[in-house]
Length: 374
Figure 1 (cartoon, rainbow, N blue to C red):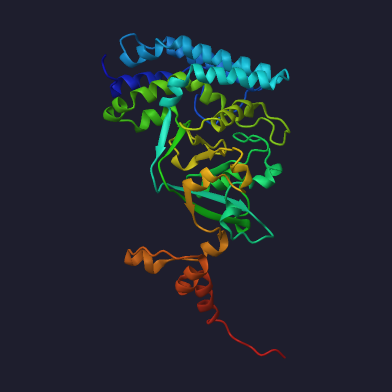
Figure 2 (figure 1 turned 180 degrees about the vertical axis):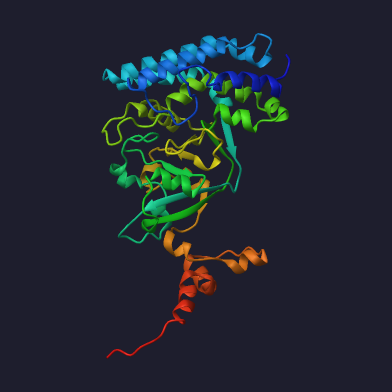
């Protein structure tokens, strides 16, 4: 069977992302619901997606491969709509059973849609704390099991299930926390201790268009094809909330079910990576990727404060207050090219004191007149 080539892929991507039509369809993320709401927007965009696949040139080899799977794509779109309607009718258990069956039907493609983080990959986590000093490792890990009552339903969050949320940048973490005052935050770097296999929803058509060369396209052909087939599922998970302070968000139904499904996956996936809906990803924005790893709960793990499996996947720095860390300049290290590892923020601050804002401000104070109190 002929292999994919870059020109074939780019030709069909141009058809998908074209904005020549008068309605200016946008297949990128984040998605904003039209006035008629989430389901209407999902259906309208997916109907247009199928229409564009139907228009692929029959001479395009990769386009033909996608066209051959159009029934699978259409069925996936219909099943997602049906699952949401069943859920909205109050039959949440039945809806999840249908979702699980759907995932099993598409499992071959889902397993191709994976991303492997190698050992020592870096991630970040941020926590807001205005009044309390955060200095223990557990305080910046996932919410402890004995405080699961604090876990509410969010996009990839099931109420009462403490999962571990990480960003691939501090900026992504800040965005996810709704841009808090940075002086009220503590931050930590997480390093993976082993290879982590993640379900990859952090793909867009623009990323494929701008980042793939021919050799990479051939290597990842099965993953790219799986992305086209599973696109209705990824799209359904990429909506902004239509009502910011609502107690229920229809946009979270499918992402919640994915997290529930991942919680039952004992072997293949550790979690999922996805784009923040707080940032625009029309241009390839690698700083806006989040990952969530649900706990692998069992009778033994529930006796612990934190999931033993998740604890084994990461080493992390003690939480550091944003303001204190920001005061360090490390100019001497940058100039010398050295790498020095400090055990904690106080050691770093004292050894680099002259370069910190504290040391710099002491020097500045020398320039002011001193006076006696009368």
